[in-house]
Amino acid sequence: MPLTQYMQKQILDYICGGAAATRPASRFISFASGTPTEAGASDAPINARASLDIAAASGTPSSATNRSARSNATATANCTVFGWNMYDSAVGGTRLAYGTMTATFTVTNLGSVIMSAGRLIITIG
Image 1 (tube, rainbow, N blue to C red):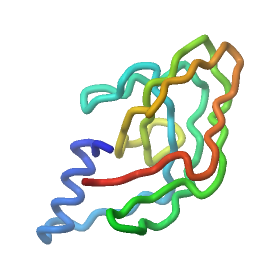
Image 2: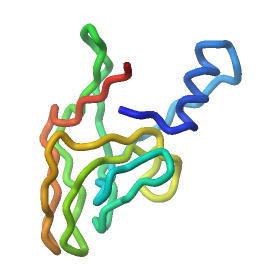
Image 3: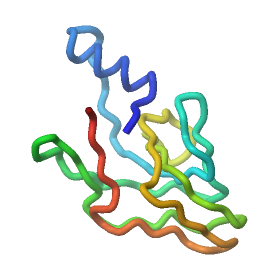
Image 4: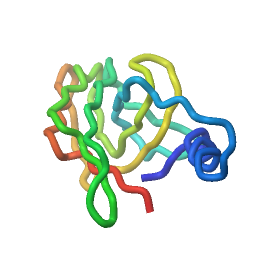
């Protein structure tokens, strides 16, 4: 899972004793109809971000996962989903991290995207 430059700076400041970061109050996921990169989110034509309820990291190597199923509202056009983006706000806000799906999937116009509990696995390393 790549971290955005914003989050890379926050982590370096934390490790090196720089400015203290403020933890986001909430996290939201959007799905990408292209491969998300540092340069762009490629958000899919889906009309809302879904809130994320993420468990504390555990295991070796450490990973964290979503605790409950999430629906990301409905697609406003046919699209194939290639990746995801994590934000600190339901609208606008700052993009924190992004990644690609292990398998792409297609959403039809007015179809819903539902992510089951435990399907988003976040690791750094």
